Image (tube, rainbow, N blue to C red; front, side):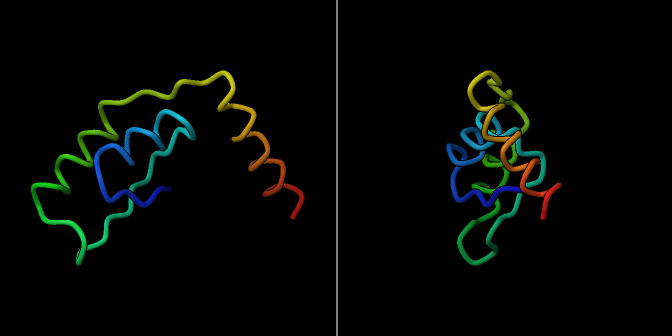
Length: 65
């Protein structure tokens, strides 16, 4: 899950950590911005490679704690 305030936030987290759940702040985000943020998440792709190492570290921590 990722908190996104801008579409750039959503694109970055999708491409770096393969986020598939989006949190938006109702007091910080108007409807037009929310649509842009959701579109950014949906339209972007996970880059893989070096970012997979980070995801595996998080999964290992979750599995061991």
